[in-house]
Image (cartoon, helix red, strand yellow):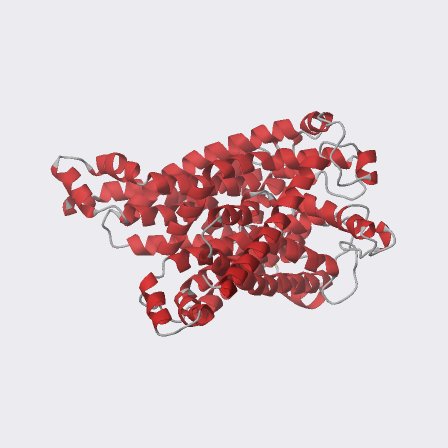
Length: 276
Length: 301
């Protein structure tokens, strides 16, 4: 390697490292600040806390209603995850493997859904759901969440199902497998990565969804995590450090999930996207 | 085999749940929203058909709408351009290094999976006069006192106000990872032979990037850009969480916050629906436009 290209490499690494700091330092700052008390924060904003104040967390957890809303978010996301994968994989199987004339048209129909902002359906859905008593229930946000997760789930899974060699289905057919058996015994096990990807993507998206949950849920006991966080908005709120604790509590689950599956998300997202 | 796969009953059974849900929860409500947008509609009042009145009001009388439209268009253009530039830059740099590539990639992608609501709060604190950036500037001696530094989130001067610019930079910070990932995926799909041939012909790295990489990732530019465009038009969480309600009057509205206020705070459901329809039309138009202009033809890879 020539000296010139070594210097360029060096510059690239310096730039990337600085940028990485721009990403990590704010997050680190939140964690550190969440362990201080307000007086210390004002005097020395960047010093490490002398004595970590874990009280901030217990305060945010109970007074900020974060315990309850974390549980709600968890319930909503898990149910949505399972149902959207079940419905999505069934539809993807019908589109990718089964043979019928309108398969492509149906796919387009689902894909248009990706372009539609949820804001447009907010008002009609809200009216409809209040009429049938679904507002202020978790079911009322699970149903739209499943629907919103469907297009991307179907899109990615169709890609994975089409990647399965046709011969496998033929072999299963000769062995006497029914069309339903092919779904459960051939298609599903071979699209594991696809499920991983779509599952993580829909989980993360729904965990973070704010607008719909805010409109549909006004009862304290049913609020999801992002909605509970909006309470903390406003610069004249006292107790900064407790708010920082709330922020940390809100992002920890996704950070943990991300750290476990980062490479899977990234690779799978890539596969799904490139196929389009 | 073929007969098995043409089983009408099975097809219907497999497609039905998703199709019904999709139609009932997404397409039917959109038709209703279009209908509502032509009506005067408030909760507990009967629906009254008023024709184009909502739209006329929206585009002629409503000052907040003009601001919201302006801010949303600013978000749209800013995010499309900046994400294209930075996304490509990061993707190009990361594909050129080996050591630590995954680490950097994962760090830059991290904020994409975090809650915008939480990150909005975090950045609000960073830009609050008493804390964060201003405190840092004061400790370096650039400004004499925290409160005298720039009022990042409260300055309302100018055509596009400072808080909106700050928020769009935060949005860039949060979502640039996504564009980067998409571009990286496409770049790593390009066969090495092409580059080798170019280097043998005496091309430099920059030339190879401009002449080979850029044309070959063009389809992905269209995809990534449409995602950005829709995302920036839908923008809600960051604006809602970084600017406390009522602080800047109507100066910091975007389409989504305007819709939320009109429909769910002032109970004007018909009017809100009209904003929703405008938003929908904009999303579809921008996507079509980007795909038409950017995605001219597919090269053989």
